[in-house]
Image (cartoon, rainbow, N blue to C red; front, side):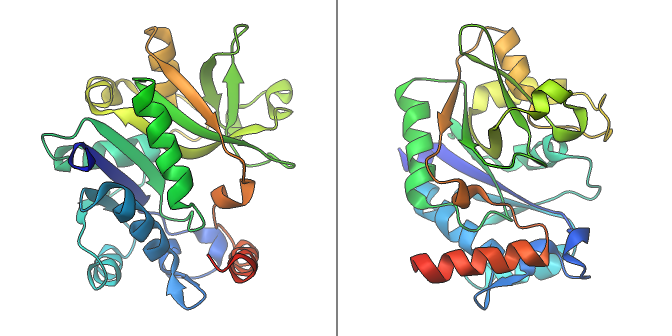
Length: 248
């Protein structure tokens, strides 16, 4: 079963809020580059079917990962959004893969248990798209989960595009998905960049799937700390404190 699952890790960004010239995913968490936490967790779930999308300081990122574990690399020369990053990796998916996990290289606290639970929910429900969401105390900066009148996942709206009412939603997108390869192949190119950031948001596939009456589901995670994306030196220190306490 493991051979039919792949994982795409999005790791192309520089991370300007880190106030450093170093690619964001190379910043160290307890003396270990954060990308290695993510790659090792993905490897436990999908074996060697891991594709890392690199961009800023691509060769250095490849070197750091390659010294530890075997993965494939896709190059995102221009950072045009998460949807574009996934497009860059599509040709590297093994032909027999049926489901694709998509995660970020700056979410090092994501656990094997949580990722496995998302995959199980997705496969047992025979879903086309499954999203990991979490309720947070301060949703600022996160994409908000939109539910329809039947409590079905209808879409995700990014902070920059959200209305005042939508910004009040505390259920947020973790950026972690499991998507059927067939659905992804047929719909990734339908994503448009008509938003405030002029980027191709991967989140748009949720609305595409919903509008096609495909099976779209959401798993609400129990630990909001796991999905913390590290975007600043303060968040890096916060993640280190969590790791020290939990001995993850």
